[in-house]
Amino acid sequence: MTSRILGLVRDQVLAHLFGASVAMDAYYVAFRIPNLLRDLFAEGAMSAAFVPTFTSYLTSRGKESAWRVGNNVINALIVVTGVLVVLGIVFADPLVRLLADETYTANPAKLTLTIDLARIMLPSLLFIALAAALMGMLNSLHHYFIPALSPAMFNVMTIICAFALVPPLGRMGVAPITAIAIGTLLGGIAQLALQWPTLRREGFRYRLTLDWRDEGLRRVLLLMGPGTIGMAATQINLVVNNQLATGQGTGAVSWLNYAFRLMYLPIGLFGVSIATATLPTVSRHVTQKDLAAVRDTIARGISLMLMLNVPATIGLAVLGIPIVRVIFERGAFHASDTVATAAALRCYAVGLVGYSVVRIASPVFYAIGKNRVPVVVSMIAVLVNAALNVMLVRVMGYTGLALGTSIAALFNATALFVILRRHVGGLHERRLITSAVRIVIASIAMGAVAFVVERWTATWMPQSALPWQLLRLCFTIAVALATLAAGAWVLQIEEFNDSMRLILRRFRRRSA
Image 1 (cartoon, helix red, strand yellow):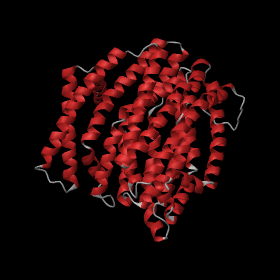
Image 2: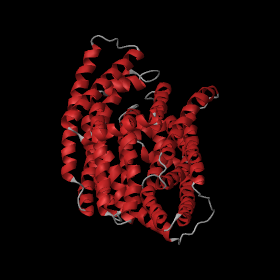
Image 3: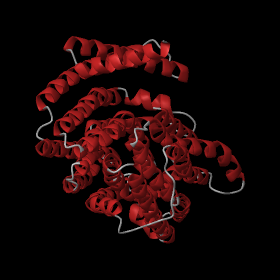
Image 4: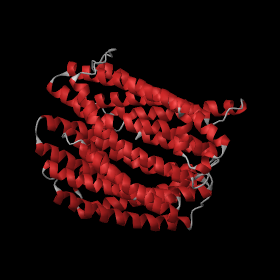
C-alpha cells in the first residue's frame, strides 16, 4: 500500500509539473524502452521461472544449493541485461522511431528529447532485473514486506529528483523532464539497495561465479524460453499500442498512462500481492506433490482477488472523474485532462479482474511445469488485443486502446483459468461461481449508491476548492463501502467476512 500510494504521489507531482504535455509524452515513450526490456527479461518470464526453481532447491536441497542457483542467476542477469543496456543506448534512435508514430517523430525537438531520456533511463534495467531476482529469493524465504516496499524507492527517488533537480535544470537550459529520467535511474538502484541487507541476514553471500552448465540455472533458462517468447509477443503488442497512441495527438500518451496507473493501483495492492504470496506456496505444494493443497491455494487466491477487485472495478468506473480530479487536477493538469483521463480509466477498469487473474494464474503454470501454456494463450491474447485496438482506435480514439486492452485481458484470464482447472483437477468452481455472483450483486449495489451520493453531494457542496472535492469523494466512498459491507452481510459473502475477521484480529493484537 505504501508503494502504491507513493506511486500516486509521484504521478501527482508529474501531473502538477508537466500535465499532459510534450515533455510528459516524451518521458512515457522513452520509459517504454527500459520498461519493455524489464518486462521481457526481469519481472516477467524471469521471475515466473526463477521462483519455482529457487523454492524447489530451498525445500528439497537446502539453503546452500539455493544460494548457488541465486548467484548464477544474478550473474547471468548482469551479463544479459548489461549487453541489452549497451545495445539500447547505441540504438536508442531507431528504438524510439519504432515505438512512435510518424507524426511524433516528425518533430525533431520531441524526437531528440525522447532519445536523450531513453539513454539516461536504460541502465535502470540492470538494477531492476537484479532487484526482481532478490525479490524472488526473499518471497521464497517468506519475506514479503521489504520486497513489496522496494518499488516505493523508485517513486521516492523520482519525487526527490522532481523537487530537487527540475528548478536548477530549467535554469541551466536543460529540459526539466530530464530530472525525472535521472530519478528513474536512481530509483532502480534504490530498489536493489533496500532488499540486499535482508537477504544477507538470511545468509546469502554474493559470489562472482557464473556456471552456465549449472543444473538450476539451466532449469531457469529452460523455463524462461517459452515465457520470453510469450512476453515478446506482448511487447510487440505494446509497441503497436504505443504507435497508435502517439498518433492520437499531444496528451493521449499521458492520459492513457495516468489512467493505467490509477487502474493499476488495485492490481498492485491486491492482484500482485495475492499472486506474490500464492506462487511460493503453490511451488512448495507442487514439490511436496500435494495437489489438493495446490487447488485450494489457487482457488482461495482467486476468490479473495474477486472480493477486492470487482468492487474496485465498479468504483473506478462510477467515480472516475472525481478521483482523477482530486488526485491530478492542479498545476499544468487541467479540467480537460481530467475528463480525458477519466474516460480512459473507465475503459481500463473493465479489464481489472482479468489483469489480476492473469497475475495469479500465469506463474502457477511455471510452478506445475506447464510453462508453454501461458505463452500460447498470451500470444493469442496479443493477436486479439492488436486486432481490437486497431479497430477500436478508429471508432473511439485513444479510449479504444484502453478498452481493447481490457477485453484482451479478460480473454487471457478466462483461457488460463479454464486450462488451469484441467491441469490441477478442478478449482472449486461451484464455490467460486457462487462467490462471484454474490460479489457482483453487492458491488453493483455499491456502485449505484456511489453514483447517487456523488451527484447528491454536488448539489450542496462547493466544487471548486480541493478540500471540498476531497471531502465529497471521501464521503461518497465511505457510504459506498458501507453499502458493500451491508450487501456482503446480507448475501453472506464468505471472503468479505473472512477478510474482516482477519483485519479485526490484527487490530486486537496491536491494541493488546
